[in-house]
Length: 178
Image 1 (cartoon, rainbow, N blue to C red):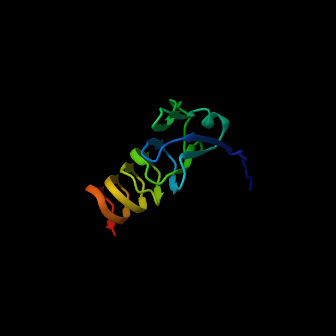
Image 2 (cartoon, rainbow, N blue to C red):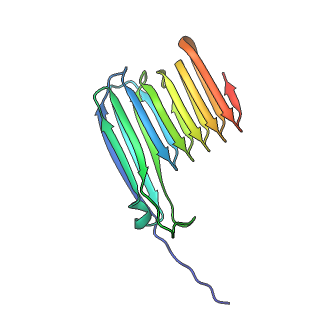
C-alpha cells in the first residue's frame, strides 16, 4: 500500500483598522466566502477585523480587502481577482469580518455570498442581502430590509417605535420574527 500525503500550509492574515464614526453614520460591506459578525458598542468609532484564510499564498494573493472611510460612511469590500484554470476545492480563500460599531449606526448595504451574518444590539437601519447564508439579529428598532436565498432569517426587534418599514424575504429558507 502506497500512501501519499501533501501538507498544505494554510495562510492566515489579520487586518485591523479603526475609524471614527458618529452614531448616525453608515456602513456598507460586501463579502464573498466568509461570515460577518457586527456588534454594537457605546462608542464613536468602528473597529474592523478582517481575517483572511487561504489554502496557499497563491489563493491569498487573489483576495483584496478594501476598507474606505468617507467621513460619515465606511465602505468595506472583499474583491476576488480572476481565478486561473487550476482553481479547485483544495484551493480556497475566505475573509471573516468582525466589526464593533456605534449602536445606532446604519448598516446600509450588507451583501454576502456564502457567509452568515450575525448582528448584536445594533439599533440603526438594516439593509442586507444574503445568498447561501443565514442572518441572525437582535436589538433592532429601525427600518429593516433583509433578503436571503438559501438562508434563514431570524430577527428580534427591541421595539418598533422607529421602524416605518420592515421587509423580510427568503427563498428556500425560514423567516422568524420576534
